[in-house]
Structures are given as structure tokens and as C-alpha cells.
Length: 369
Image (tube, rainbow, N blue to C red; front, top):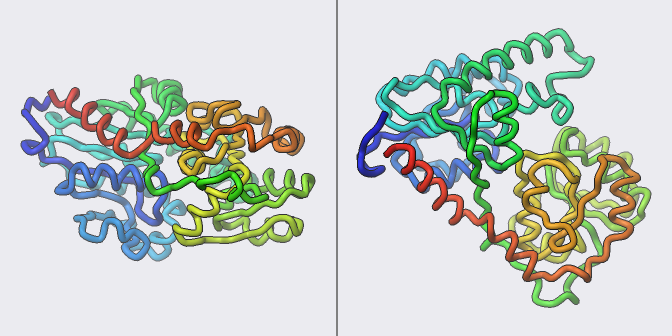
């Protein structure tokens, strides 16, 4: 194992599943890049036009990057990802940090190197089909089953080669133990809380609820729309995805679809909402932190990462079941005036990116020495 005094003595590589859009995992990668600016990034696919944050970075891609559609929809090539990451030559590096929700943990490193995996979850559609059903269901069932079984066996073996696991929440650390049979510490992902600003007065709060997220099945936007159809309360939806057209068809006039918006509009909509709706079981969940950094309470499903960040009665409320009746009753009883804006924001600041960077550096130092 490595015995060097500081990071300047180490040759470091960062590994990431794919770079096709900027989300929570990419924010973690950006923080790692800021900590280790000379470390190259190895990834399966890199869409330069969508990821300008890494334009001055050495990004090394796999053979998948040359396949048509891969830069737009890398998930379609999940069956090729194990081979892609195994093909990288990382033999010259002392420290490899993989930032993973899929297959990047499968890179091969030399026997004297340390491999630390920041795991956002064991692959959801492989290990947790009840949460993410992308590799289950009747359509292309045989192909999906073959892919899922192959990935499950490969993923377990790949996890055994990692030296140290960091989950992005207690929830994920428990999954790592359950599915990989590996112990894991946890460090919460970075959120740029300084970017979000609460309103100065309660009089600025508007009469609408807010949903922010991709419009895909496992994010549960259908549940939110069905509930607000019944409630009749104003709801604004930010985000896009394959379900958008169908959701527009079933939504009543009290529901407004805003699609993608700029940063200033997003900050304003967060800060002026009555509350933020978070209906999914997430690994961690960055958007509730963004809402709380804006001083707004969160109404969340009582499972997953939200249970580690939302304090019921203080920064929001939980609903117990992913059903219309359960969410309906919670929203119906919700009283936004009982929550203190600054108390909510103080809770969000516990997850600031500065804290993430400090903890990651401390963790790595403890392992390399």
C-alpha cells in the first residue's frame, strides 16, 4: 500500500460512469476535480457540449464513446460498460477514486495502488428493481433478464476488488453491506448552498408547490400529478424526460410544466414556493437540500436519503406510502407558516460542498497513510 506524505507525491486518477449530463454524481466529480485538478478523468462516454464544467480537463473515454447515440443515451449501452472500464490502463496510478452509480468501480488498478470508491448506490436497476424498473418489465423481457443477471454477477465481483467504499448516505452504506457484503463509511454529497437564497419576508411566499426532477418512472412524477389533480392546489413542475407528454395529458389546469429553466429562475421558484414535493426513494437526494437552502420546507416520502436530511416538524414533513391518499393527506394538512426560514436553511448548510471537500480529504489522508 501507499506510504507517501501528501497528495503532491501521488499520481491520482478519477473514474466516473459517464459524462452525458450534469447531475448529483457529476457535482461530486466536479468537487473531486477541484481538489485534484491534475488528475485525469476516465469515463465511458463524454458529451463535451453538455459538460462544459470539464472543458479544461483531461478526459479519457472508452470505445463506447464512438458509438452513435452513446453520448446522448449512455444507459442503452450498460451491457458494454464492464468491458469498457476493464479496458482502461490505470497501472501507473497510486490512488484511484471512482465516483460510481453503475460500473466505474470495475477498473483494474495495480497491486500497490489504493482504490477508493465513492458509491452513490449499488446499481439500482440491477439490485433494487422495486425502486428502478428499467431492467424489468414485459418489454424486451428476455434481453433485460440476461443483462441484469450478467451485471449482478459482474458487479458483485468488481465490488470485491475495491479497497475502501464510501456511501453517499447511511442508506447507501447499508445497501453496500447488503448487496456487496462490504463495510462502507458515508460522506454526504456536496451541495452549493451559497447559490440559493431565501426570501427576506414571508410575504414573498407564493401560492404554489414545487416539483423538480427528471420525468421518469422511479422519480414518481405521476404520483405527484395525480395527487395535485385531486387537491386542486397550484403545482409547478421543473424538469424534462420521457414521461413529459403523457404527464401533460393527464394533468389538470392547476399544474404548470416549466421544462428546463435558467439558474436565476430556479432560485426564485425554490425560494417562493409554499413547499417542495419529493416523492421518490432516493439514494441521497440533492434537490431537497436545494429547497431547504432556499428556506423552504420539504414534503418527502419517508424512505431513503430524505430521512437523513429532512427533520419532520422542523424542515418539512414525511408521507408514509407512495400512494395518492398518503401524499394527499400530508399536503392537505400542511401548514407552511409553522416553519422557520432560517432554521431550514441552517439544516441545509450541513451538506455544503466545503464540508464534503474537508471530509473527503481527511478520509483519503487516513487511508493513504
